Amino acid sequence: MLTFAACHHHRTCGHCHPAVVKIHTSSVCPEPDLVLQDIADCVHNYNITSEFAYETARLCLINIIGCGLEGLRFPECASLMGPVVEGTVVPNGTKIPGTSYQLDPIRGAFNIGTMIRWLHFNDCWLAAEHKCSYHPGHPSDNLSANLAVADHLMRQGQTFTVKDILEGTIKAHEIQGGLALLNSYNCSGLDHVDLVKVASTAVISKMLCIQIL
Image 1 (cartoon, one colour):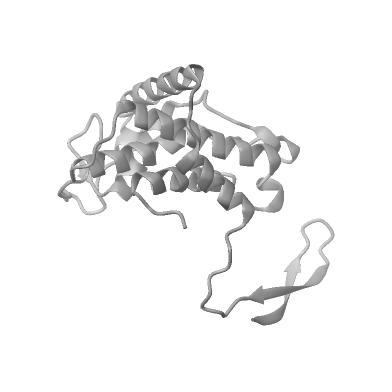
Image 2: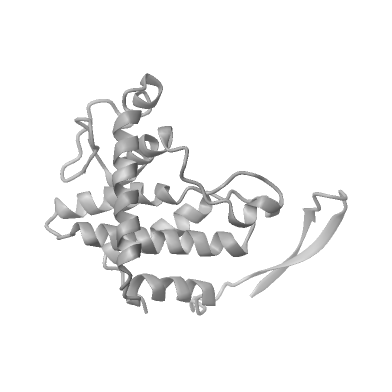
């Protein structure tokens, strides 16, 4: 294990404080942090029994589809859609609702997310961000990755039901929401949108059948 002295800038007083950063050079992977274990356990093992949660997720799904399709009417939104290289069609790719695009799931998630966010003004979760900013998280953004990956995998022969999508939606909302309640990322100079990446990645790991050791 190597250590080196680093200097980080304090935002409020401008002083420079020495900090020791530890770098693990061992090939042995350390045990995951407890919070990562809790997230993995939630996604892979927790059984949702609340009908109210499923009904709420169903309304969320209907809402984002409506917002996304309406967003396509705006040229500014439509101009951001499509593949990186014009005319590209990805075999077994993600179909983008309301368009003829068939993209890789990464670009597909961006397209669906753009559609959702364009007019989805009422979906916000401020949580702990009220401490130093008013930039709330948007839990419905998780559905962009959820839908994109599910559609791609189904074209390769896997089976997903609407209930599977709703389960992923509930768990992603819970993960993002729980982390946001306890942590103000903007106060630490981090982008709170990273919580969408954490929640979506966790849910998609189950869709991709990634084994949890």
